Image (cartoon, rainbow, N blue to C red; front, side):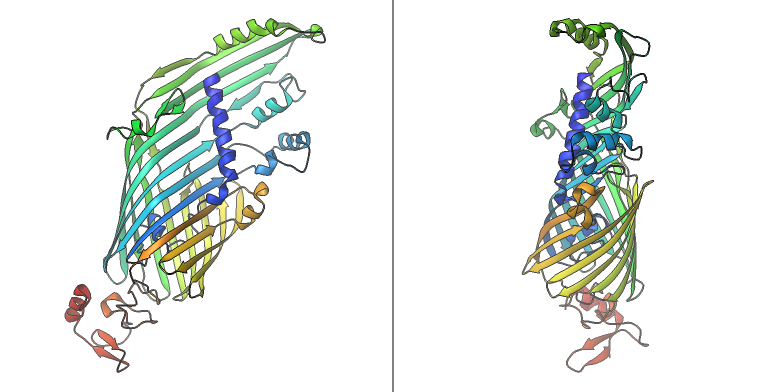
Length: 509
């Protein structure tokens, strides 16, 4: 039992420590399809960020506590007794479903060509999902002899909890097929670092149902924990994992498509993270079949006097033997499927620099079971600042409404960004149900600034400030006749042959 309880305790500590540093977080949807963020195409592979060559480092974290807030557990304004009494007495407050996913993108490199975009991303993904039972907190705080637990079986179930981390190297390739349509593909090589999967973990406790003078307790338990990349529940040194190419390997795939039918509208759809990891290194398992142990015989009439610890030695030993369980290595195949995340976007351009976006995502977070939609306004408020304001709504049995804020600032080739989808959660973290935040910086090389957002960079655009098409060198196509180009000197549109125009575009003449 000590192995299983150590694992559960580590899960809970990690969750609350991690959520305490939420300012590192993720904004999966805020900044969606943003041309100034080169990591945007990690969510939408068909998207082509703006700059010719760019390097980015950022961290993203999603945390979600559907039925509890940090303030429900830690409240410095009142006594612990009142905090826990309120928590345990409220059936709507539960500890199940605590979900944390963190992406530490150590480097993202994007390179843009006239009709394509290639990017490479390397980072570490950490995922954790905890099904904790509120009765476990009650027993720790009140004790099993409390009137709330006396005479009834307390059922504590942690099954379904997991914690894992893997290294991901991802290549994304976006391609322009027509003036209207882009596609993109992504493939990732995964390297599992460590994995804990608690498929079963059920504990029961029944206190003194029939005795009057004797304190009787019945315990029952069943668990199965499988691990990889660990040794006696502790992660192994990284050098052991990277010494062999076949250790804990996996792959994932994704695709995307984007349509820009006219100046005002853009539509996109994409799916990422279809794949799995095969955990075959340093496999261990900890298992206990359903076991029941009943202790009888502690005379409670003598509890008022001095009781030696030695009197309980036999009791402790007998309990340890009963719940010793089984530890082993190897076992059957252990694979972790990485369910996909689907993203859908509709963007309306009020002006080239003022965009309204509606986006929907399914498969958010470590378990990929959350869904959310976001309405966002993105505006260029100064020459070197973009401001985003958003409203996000979650629905996972319990609806959540979040107001978000973000900015991107530019200073020469350096760009910084901070995107938050739950401003109230930052101000009042104790009362939040989680948030998504993205923070990072980018170094830009190249001159592919595109002021009119028509996917033709300004230095190549013959009609700057006017939405146009690539086949027309950035000029509109709504005039009859042959293709044409804009001559700034004569301030006129000059007809050109399509073949000749394509040749000029392709070879940069």
